[in-house]
Image 1 (cartoon, rainbow, N blue to C red):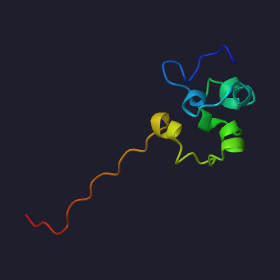
Image 2: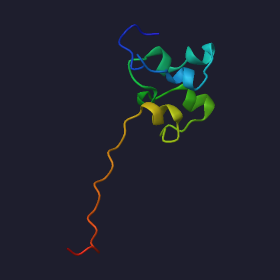
Image 3: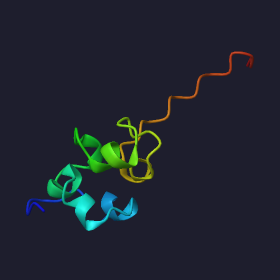
Length: 82
C-alpha cells in the first residue's frame, strides 16, 4: 500500500466495506493507491470481479463517500398567485 496521504484516512475503506480478501485487495488499484477514492481509479477489483458497474451509482461505498450533486433549486409555484 502507498505511504502517501490516503483518501480513506478516518473512513472505513472500500475494501473493508466490500469485504475484499487479501488476494483481491493486493491486486486492486484502490488498495495500492489509496490517495484517491476507488471511483477515481480506472481499474478496481470490484469492477472486474464483483461486477460493480464502473459508474458506481449503485455502489454503497460511492453512496457513503462519493461527491454529492447539490439539489436543484426549488422552482417557484407558477399556480400560486399573490
